[in-house]
Length: 306
Ligand SMILES: Cc1cc2nc3c(=O)[nH]c(=O)nc-3n(C[C@H](O)[C@H](O)[C@H](O)COP(=O)(O)OP(=O)(O)OC[C@H]3O[C@@H](n4cnc5c(N)ncnc54)[C@H](O)[C@@H]3O)c2cc1C
Image (tube, rainbow, N blue to C red):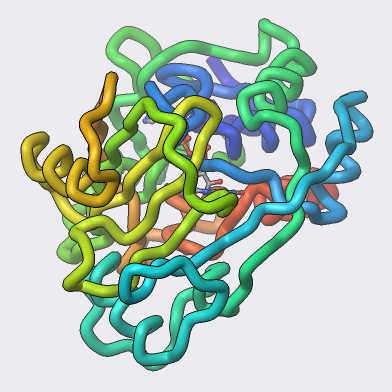
């Protein structure tokens, strides 16, 4: 089978690319990607940016916005500001970074304590995009190998020729399928714990916990029916339950745990970049600052250049 442009990966990045680049085929192992996790680990917010506003409008979705309140839990108290010493402690705790020249772009590094987002649920946003892509442009297949010289993708029982390839799957997976041997560590894992609870974070939507001595988690996010705790690294179930119980001072009804081995990006590789391959999305580009609005911008640029 031969196609001009193939998009690899059907998470939010691949769906956005397929929406804008209409003469393309989307090949994915499954639809949704990180959005379809058991409980919302991320992406959590559609930031109030013009690119997202325009896409929501095109999709006839609600343009309602809301404000997200961010706090910092320091010395047993919830506060609105953080100093540079604690920022450094936070990055060391959450990413294992002991010395950094520049803090990664984030709400914390900007010292913000609120920002505006669109109220629409991320899953509804994703499903609206997918519903605009005709079924015959979506192929549900896991790609196992890539021949970048002859421009062919192989699944177990089929092959797909392309002229241009837009990759949205994590770059390490992509490189390993190209048969490249690479040395390097690209990611740090995060263990997430979901606790069903009406525990109130004093009105904050999420709170950072920069101090090493307070807890092993570095962030708690309030979601519709509970809390999500973020712990750097791979932790045991007993460990995360102990930490959550210690903080909440109570037992809880239901909990779920999940690990994302590619949560924090700490490295990149550009030695295998080819002219006919574009990487789009946080994990394909290995750039932690990439959000949905950046993917929209990038996809529109490609559409204009095709
Ligand atoms: C904790 C966290 C919080 C985040 N919060 C935000 C936020 O608030 N706002 C924001 O804008 N962004 C956020 N992001 C960043 C980014 O927008 C999201 O991570 C986004 O969901 C990534 O989507 P993706 O399509 O790039 O990748 P994925 O969702 O990982 O999709 C990859 C797709 O590729 C498919 N695939 C994988 N391997 C193969 C294969 N071999 N063959 C075929 N298909 C394959 C998978 O089935 C999947 O569908 C966050 C990220 C994280 C980790």
